[in-house]
Image (cartoon, rainbow, N blue to C red; front, side):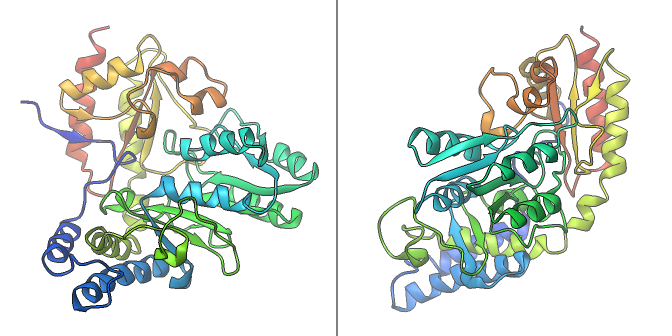
Length: 373
């Protein structure tokens, strides 16, 4: 069997040992229903509130402004739908966004709740701020939805500029910060709402959070009980909450470790570019997250390369994990205007545990794959 090298940290991160241990302990001692008032319920409730407090410390907000969700997708759904729950208006966003933003935007338009103003995208993968200014000048913008960093290319969006422009126009701003929490120190603290997913920062899957500013109204997508102040009905899992608490506290100190990955990522990109004629890095002209390498290999199909690398022991992806299993071109790279790259790119995403030896092994595996062309 080949050596296994995991370079798909943007899809999900390996859980910390401490996260698993906390969840095992909770399974023994805090398996009760957090809504129950007896001792079993109170033990479970402590895990839930501990997670809320840990997320609040990470996000620099009051715990009362943290709504626990099933993950980033639900948090994005809550944020977008809440903005148009009371009145219709214009939603400004782009095709760079995660499907849990773009598909909700499309649904809101079909339902007559919003008119979507799709922003133009620059060739380097950043939003066109001049087009944003035009969109805001058109008036009646209720929400601007923007990601902190693109999961496919790692391109960092000009969040501070977007926030300032939207504020002056009186528009609400939602930041999909799923790829930023635990990896960046710039967490868009001024945004009206922000989304978080535990499994992107060494925690468990199926839990995340929507962080909102005081006074921002959040309306439920689901109807049911009074959990999470009625915003997110359904029993919160105390086991996942225990894991989220550990992950959120770890995330407060981890951005420095992620930022230090830049030279390792650059070495990986340099090696890959030397293996295939015409290979190029997507978004290279923009500021990028230091752990993401999206490389186009003309003449290849993304799915074929990913499968071949897997057989050689290297885990990478053709793009966002939430678009996995499809043969459609990358919508992100198409939005950037590179239709060729949309069909032949592979994303390698490093993590805080990635080593030089692993990058060397990945390059050796890629050399074996690409030599077959």
